Image (tube, rainbow, N blue to C red):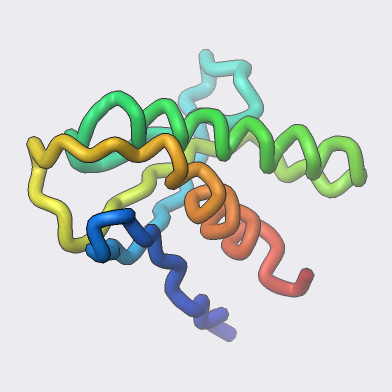
Length: 108
């Protein structure tokens, strides 16, 4: 049975918004980090840093509650932004964390 996920959106102060599409992958055999996260489009280092911090925080909380999944690579694609768009996205971390948590634990 396929699980349907409701979309998660990032809302910006400008009034714009983008939908987060999330892809999960198994890491390469030589990687030993519990989570690696990246933004698919080149939209600036603030959002890329937010993605990494969000994923690490989700995994830290999951580990604390004994829900940690196996090592994962998470690719966040921000639908509606063109590559090269420079956005200040430090506050996007909450939406990115929610998108990842929703995807990893749809039953919670």
